[in-house]
Image 1: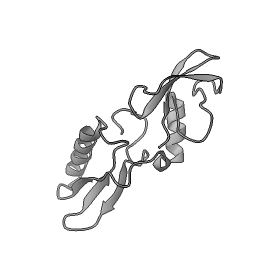
Image 2: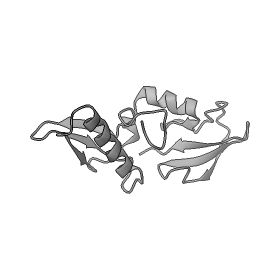
Image 3: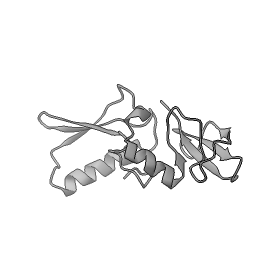
Image 4: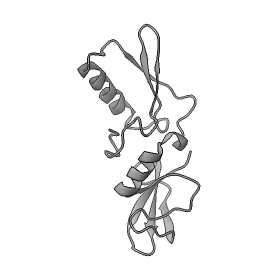
Length: 134
């Protein structure tokens, strides 16, 4: 599971990009942005899972190019984000994940993590994070 959003996996987020064949094979991961503070934790979590299932010989590569994009988030993860209280990324007007209102305002370009922005609903008055599109 993602260490910052425990309702979705790093696979659903598109952070785990591929398994690279070779000797040894590698799990390819791309953080949501360069400098993401969870990158080391994610690598440790992947390493622990691989080791626990007998795949200690598989390496882990942190690949920054191409850069992660919100387009890699699965449709299922979009719904999980909304249920969790985060407005998923997309071309839509920001909408409150709690009441669905689009009557919102941007409070800060940075929310609970740098990959999200903080918004507030003008109808139900609840604050919420919105994934930044990139």
